[in-house]
Image (cartoon, rainbow, N blue to C red; front, side, top):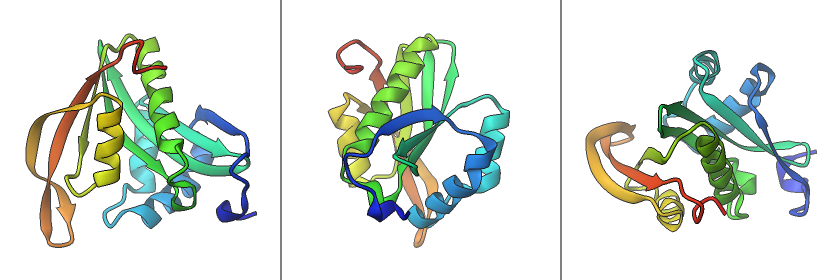
Length: 162
């Protein structure tokens, strides 16, 4: 069954990312980005003990995320939803799930970097209460050279975690 063939009412489930998920995660990543993470990047994240999660929509891997928690901070490194599942609120649900997991690991604040050109991502983060707190010049590779990163952060509080 293909991703596009699944009903929108399929059961959504979160799970730890496993080594056997990495081929599909890397395949989805390549469809989404001009400069994707590699399978090795995801494998290294698992080996480092980062919080690596997948989002299932029925039997299809619909999204994934990688987050690092240190002391009272969480750093969201990658959050992505497969193209066939975008615009269904799955990114929002995945972000909320990560916030709850981060809180469970003692994090009070989450940080991330986002491309200025990623309007949908920026809008989702702003909706979740993230504020721009800085900029990293020429942080990301881009087809026409380099692109800055907007650094954002949000308190992980009861209101955001609903």
